[in-house]
Image (cartoon, rainbow, N blue to C red; front, side, top):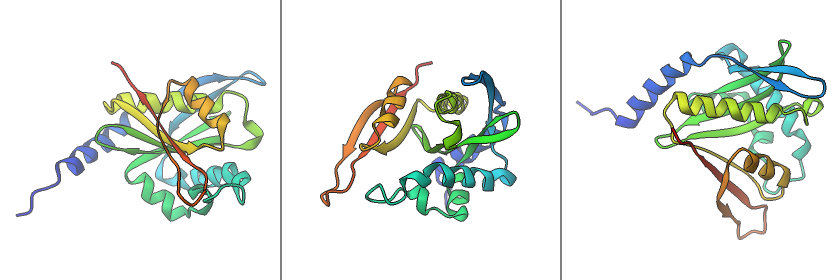
Length: 188
């Protein structure tokens, strides 16, 4: 008999707990409205994928190496979500934002936070980050982690405003753009 990997058993239990996550409405600006953020259902994964593709399209040909989000397929997104999940943000039932996440032994990894270009500057990314913190707390993860590019200072500033600190900067020897790894510790 082969012993089951303890982490895989724990992750499976945590993924079941995600079903307890409730939608949360957050106030947003310009004009004042509410963004309802909730866990994406399996049927909504193509919407998560489409929002990601639209939101990251502006980086096509501008980042070296290219963003994985611009190269990802729907199957790649589905595979990522098997290790965690995804969230959708809606204004009056219209999807405008998404993010993917992976559950890890010591943190919740946030990936591909995406806001449609026509909806930016309204506090939507902040609301999604707040929801991701809610998910991390629901799953008893002591940290949130994410990565961004050094060439995207607005992203770094957004994450800093939400309590993230730079954990590491990986500078490729090829002269390509550096990756900034950021972490937010969650206190009880």
